[in-house]
Length: 595
Ligand code: ARG
Image 1 (cartoon, rainbow, N blue to C red):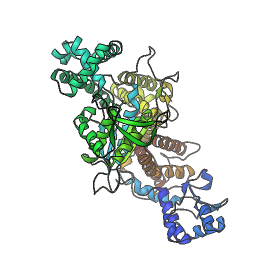
Image 2 (cartoon, rainbow, N blue to C red):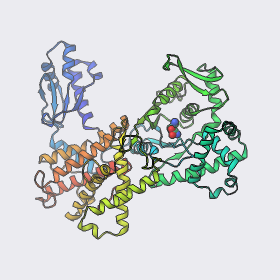
Image 3 (cartoon, rainbow, N blue to C red):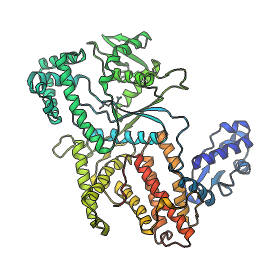
């Protein structure tokens, strides 16, 4: 189904062809939601620019366009305002018919895309040797939401965890452990993530203080890379334990992701460097192998290269990312690769993408219509109440496991505090389910509802508030709509579907429009990769629902008469619930039927 806006855009384009000739077909119809509902629902500003080109009066051009429009079944007669804005107001009968169709469709009127794209989402991607902490939160949550939206659209998704499981930090660890902790080799099963953290701290300290140790650590990297058995075995123990720990977090958050860390690409690195040199893109400079990209200068105005092989022969993060792009395009046949990574890595990705294009890594094969799309979705930091990077009170890193535990515990008391008759009869299991949904949902929703690039202050009170644009409010809104069905004694699924609804009251019409905006919103999220567009929409939808269901402002539902009106309104409830459930689900947030 087309989105409402597309429908109007297409009609305006047809009108443009009539008014301006064939070139009208290539013009942007400039259709936007109106700034104020009193002008209608959508507005086109195309007449002004067109008038200039045709040397005619804008209002006259607007009138010619309106006369040429074939849109009477969708909109009321369009009105011309001001210097030549054309305002469109959707007809309730049209909305009613569309909603009837949406109701009959389990996908709520959103068909899978015609041409699915093989799409990689590279997200979460923690560096091992550390327990997952708050710094991994955003990538994990945002990446999952983006993957879910694209998956729902029918794209062929590959969710990849580009784990930092390779590199100098492991040399340091291997050296420290093989020199001082022989037990790890003998009893790897006793090794725990906490040990790893402690070893890492100690190793880092020695690395910084003791040059001899630092040298030995560098040699350990070489041992690891050349497959020396002890180094290799220790590395496996470290990674195995870290991954097991990460897996617990993902399971708890309901996140699917495939582990494919940096080490996976390690065997490909020499060939990548070779290929870049052969193509004349990389060359030796001061012992290292570098890629000089046009346009990149450092502060001193000197060329700023990407180093892909250091003078000691070691490869690095950039090399691995180049190899990963090549592999994802050539072996995985990706058409779009999305990196959900801290915004501070923007330059890294810009440079790597540019290098990959130069190297021809992104024009896959003859069958691919165009270059592979590479996108970096950068996000801001999570801050503490002091607006500095979020730390524990003692100044340590906030571990993700502890953060999630706290979220659920706090949610339990919030839900408990909101006294409600029915809740007293709930079983402990049911209460636990609600606390988990609210707590984890709150952390996710709070994160996703911020615009990506800005930092935000992690604030339990705001995210767990029962009112406002929060998960508790949204989950409560959902449960409340579902309870209407129970109280009305109707099974939503058994309500007549595929008939037009009856839309009369202004709150009904407003709710209907909001429901029909959902496909357009998902479309926008999938293009712009900004999940907060979806949270804003869902919040707006639940507000429209509240107005509709409100005793004073809205309409009667459960006791509405006659039956046809009651059914129509219950169907609006059903559609609202389904839209909220699907929308929240695409954000990775599970709903509960009762709250
Ligand atoms: N491990 C990296 C970090 O913690 C993030 C990796 C992101 N993905 C990538 N392909 N570079 O900073």
